[in-house]
Amino acid sequence: MSGIAFAIPGDIDLPTGGYAYDRRLLQEWRQAGIPARHLALPGFFPFPGEADIAATEALLASAAPGETLLIDGLAFGAFPEELARRFGDRIVALVHHPLALETGLSGPQEEALRASERAALRHARAVIVTSPPTKDILVSDFGVPEQSVAIAIPGTDPAPRTLARAATETVRLLAVGSLIPRKGYEVLLAALATIADRPWHLTIAGSPDHAPATAASLQQTVAGQGWSQRVAFAGAVDAERLDTLYATADIFVMPSLYEGYGMVLTEALARGLPIVCSRRGAGAEALPEAAALKTPPGDVAALAKALATLIDAPSERIARADAAWAGAAALPRWRDTARTVAEACLGAGARMN
Image (cartoon, rainbow, N blue to C red; front, side, top):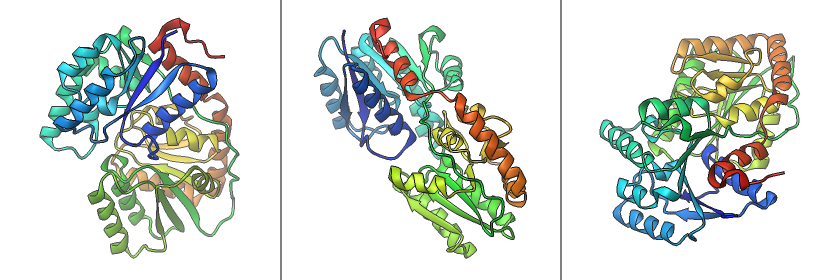
């Protein structure tokens, strides 16, 4: 059986949902005996220079003739068309979400990424996406043939249940994700400002390094509100620290303006946390309505109302926590995700027990 060379740009150990997905595929394949290896691409994607493109071409050319080139979309969407064409018969593209949909891009950046991704995708022999909505976008807006797209929804690990607290002086809110414009944290802070009379405390766990200007703006907003004791920026956290944050939260909140999936939502569901989130993303769609209050992305008033509802009503928090815990039983597991991707790369010969 031929193998998989999984080409991923930058530091695979970064604590983002996309990198976590990639790491878990490699782990599951190792455990199942699927021949796969990590091919580390330069870290300047999706805005590579000429030297990055040349290094990427050399790395792809070094792969064994029998290896499928599975290329993470953070890099593939920014490939020059001639590079995608050269290796097209061996390329399977993994698209977490189209690059042009990242919030905060300039008009020319968005246009350039949309054009490069559309052109590159024409040369992939297969495409893997992490949600049905992303498949729909690629088919309708990027010209990808529907039959060439496989959906590999992120898996979720079983987790210990977070104990719901009926009586508490301060309701602990938790948000997880990098401090980038797409995560909508400015919307969250604006919503909390309208319910500042409620007893809440917010922790945001996520790296400030990907968008320093956004991180600085959030810090300034918190300082301007005098919330140094009410809002904590935990930074990038390891798995042990994240487990602790989940275990001590009362409400999980995700105000993203856009998500291809939103893995942290199902992670919170797996712990039995009541959730407040925006409706934009397949992860939100996967949540039982009884477990989550879902609001339009960017709607400050709706987000504030949803948060106030759960802060004010401990009984509703407990009911939604129960619904989350029950709904978690139906979540897909990572072995299923890894099997889907392996079969898209290697065909029916990719057997995972």
